[in-house]
Image 1 (cartoon, helix red, strand yellow):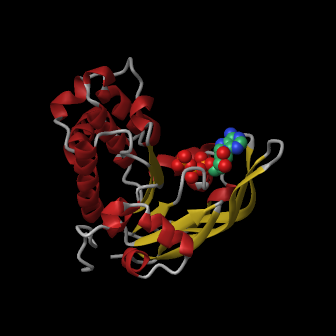
Image 2: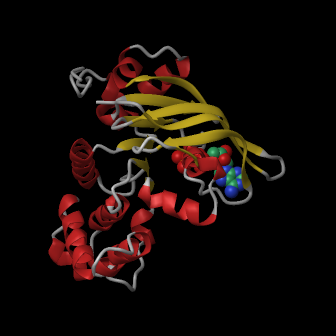
Length: 279
Ligand SMILES: Nc1ncnc2c1ncn2[C@@H]1O[C@H](COP(=O)(O)OP(=O)(O)OP(=O)(O)O)[C@@H](O)[C@H]1O
């Protein structure tokens, strides 16, 4: 499933320049391969979100990347130094190459614009060559992809359920065919059945479209189920990374074992390796 590297983070450190300073991410090295799902797990506050923001250059003061490099290996063979991008280049890079879906994304839809207009805006900004008809067609197709009736293009956010709004956000993140999607607790705010539905859909889309995913959550059982590899983060550092199966069956770090044992579903009699180990 996984291929050549698509994103490489080397020695990334991020500090919140407050008093006293908080070293939220410490010398993180992580490689994401084409088409792979890399799970990033760890307790609240360990630095997962800060790292995700850093990778996509979304950090705002007082957060400062104090060291490191993030390289995006484009499908056309060029390497893009993400840490060196600014202005227009950065704007084009985001959404186009790497898109993000956050836990609160569904609340970031504009309440006074219907779904059609919000999707349309992505295309008019990033794909100025597209005709109106193409934009309309693609918007409908995207809704279909994420399991929303294209008839809802005219709906305003308040007319959609939380799950549907999050699906619309995923559609927006997919709009430009990104090579990487960063998902930070994308379904945590939703009830379990809705979560499951969306995750299943995402996995299908990934198979079909081939994008790679950095999936961030404290939900280790979910990560074990969906990830190819898992990185465990603690106090800003990656303390262990391996295949999902090895993390589940043969964790080497006491902290990983502790994290696993904090989920009864993984250790209880009825627990089990959900993918059955077959990959
Ligand atoms: N604006 C800020 N100023 C100072 N410290 C911050 C700021 N934002 C986050 N931090 C600190 O940085 C560390 C990492 O936070 P981060 O949100 O990245 O962790 P996380 O693993 O994503 O947690 P969660 O799952 O709760 O979102 C924490 O110690 C947090 O308190």
